[in-house]
Length: 494
Image (cartoon, rainbow, N blue to C red; front, side):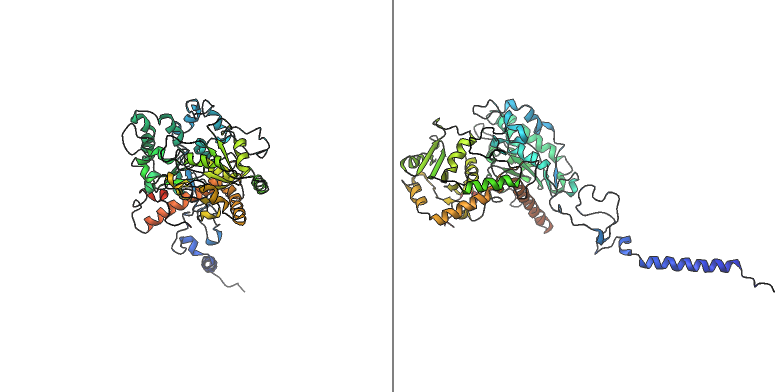
């Protein structure tokens, strides 16, 4: 009997049905949200997260389960590495023209070791054996640049950046021309910088309000308000483009887009243990002097209280004076200055040529409680680095006018502080040390240093500007306004 005839087309039909079934099964099992890029309204076909450059190298489609938290989100910084060399490295290469008015003919030695200066070989038993350098305050912008090059959240993609860092050595450039009677020459670099920045695509993102630069001089040196030759400084911060940028410097002006960050000290730890060992050492010291002033008088300044402070130090049996102009001590010698501060309970910090002093940070480094006479010396300046409650780490003797500093007032005030309060303040001062030093850029401390807090502060500031824009408000309102609060005495003491 012959086998029934089964047409070939029937076999093909059943095979087609089987393949269709398998295809439908696979399709229904597939997470179509990833195919269409739908995930709560956000497309995943394009990587819009702030991943480090190269994070998603060969992958364009990500499911929600594949997303890895980005520790740098909101913290990316883009450096204008393409900034013409005349704005930074050329200044270092021609450092012989940068003078500092001391026994050193120029600033060249201070650019060694990432801007920390030469390592101190002879610590005289006062300093730790390592991590101490002959650092000059004017090299802050070089130190900051070298630290920023090692910042862990750098990006080469400016669209991912939360902030744009402009590595212009504003202070070094200004020092070449501050005394020049030709204002065109004095302002040339500032105008060239602004012209260059304003043509960059990064500028148009927020018209410069996400840009910041760092200066190793007080910000007043960049805020000449008139075109009178006798007026001091350059016009950098009053040029139209600069009004949109923020500046970090050792002393902020009374304008809101100027921010103060600590003067560089001579201590640049490479390890957390360096900091801890130094802190423990400061806790154990004997301090025979109740108060000390290290500095020189300012006879040419009518409102300077330094003359009266010197008189009170000389008249006191518990005070010590180290006159930097007397030749009795080399005030440029870190070991000599630190020895005096380490032997003192309180260190007097009056205003000098400007409101702030590097000495204030040197004294804190030595565990010496600073005594301030004007709010603009610290309290209204270093808001990212010092406690808001200044009574925790310092003594405030408000002196609005020279005549307010009555005879014997300093000793009377300090003697009246209890031993318990003194110990509490000193402990707070010692705890502040890691926040006020610029650590070795080739290392990374567990604790935040002055650089870390400065970057965190400017990132938060720029994010507040973004928030203003998102809310539909004008970001220019108040951004670069003058704020006299920084130099106003409080009506009542905290």
